[in-house]
Image (cartoon, rainbow, N blue to C red; front, side, top):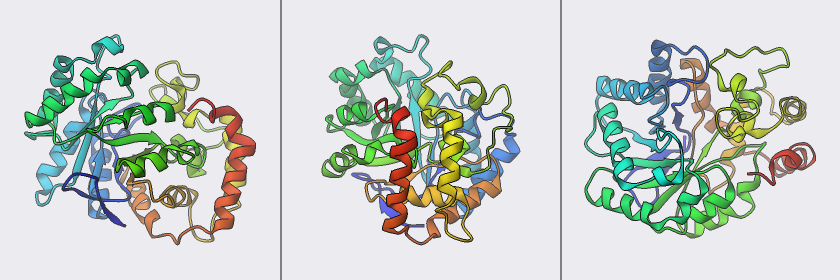
Length: 328
């Protein structure tokens, strides 16, 4: 895997990291043992970036990460977490310095550290990005040593462009994959210009781009691919990248024709993301050790040709863009 500096920090991260939502919850039955095995496999493969959140399993994800890293010892990877989604109701007025500090203190305890490497506002209401006092508060928490840096996980490109106007914002986490190509139209250019890291999430469109999901695939009741198909629990863009299920399956079959011999669709989809030099790290999740190993290996695929990249753009524009481009 390629290693790059994580902008304006002392951290050097691999371009494929470990997304720890699955080991926390909302993806069906993933045991703690499987979660630990997945994380250990990712670290054994050399990954040096872990992304989690305080609400993933109500802290379970953070605690598993803490236990695994303590047991392993040695040089720690960069661990990014998120804050804000514990608010109930989740409204802009809740994004006070006091509330954020409380969430940060909880994550410090869960992760067993004195300072968080990176805390990200967790897809806050858009109005939060128009409240400078929120970012002043984060600056103060950074000066106090509770966090080393901060970023924003956003729902759409407009929010990303607004967030990077704040000079303290180190990173933007945004959905970017073959089915969500809009970030590369303007936002990536601005992120490069402002020296902001890009963390690409939902890289496999909730498994659609693994090529293993069919119309007959059954999802557990506690899997968001079952209960959030239409945005019932949170932004529908987080589930299958907002693409209608049947449309996604149709597009997958067209993407399948572009995959090099010997490569999996998941590896191809991850390599597609890494073709952008604006992406600092992509964070596929893993339910077990085998998936984590496969994610790491995707970085070793040869660069995709211009013809293949053009073909993916055509599939996106013809089938996917009418459903997602204007929304996210």
